[in-house]
Length: 240
Image (cartoon, rainbow, N blue to C red):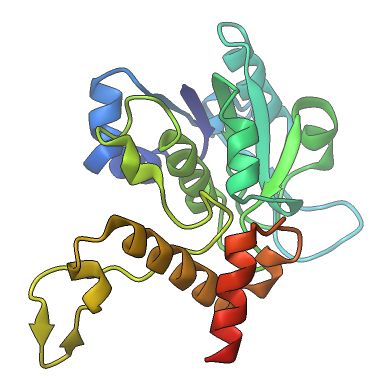
């Protein structure tokens, strides 16, 4: 999968992807990440890419031409799906990530200031995505969130693919996990996890996933078709 990140702060992206599993995936050519600075495609001799909004208002907007010129340059060599990250977009979650993983080439526009000239969205954006209902200074961190989430779904990104089984992978929050020591002044590991009984361990994990989902994100369960065992475990939890 290839990511084209349109940003006026390319170092923010490049520094991040040069660490950890993202860096290893790039070395293995599982991923390709390229940054594009729209200042390089500005018609202004000083590389200016922002201006005041018509009709008044706070702050500055990205001008249409530098961003659209950048996207057009990307499209000279790449058949790409263009995303703009903004609060009015579709919420990005694991299901959305599963949808996007089938795109082999993504371009993500990182806004700054008060936003972008709407003509960019009208002419050059395939979809708008939001990572949540809060305000940030720019789109670089949301772009990295999207990129890392999708990267985890790429074959070869993680050596042990069982590691991909995590919160939301089964539409449930993840169960609590423990490591050594078994006993501590801060608490003990549940006996079932030390029992060696795989059936009991699987049942415990499912029950605890249901418990934490009921407690923290009950909305997740509203549209879930529960199995007979899940109904039984939820009833047990409610009776405790």
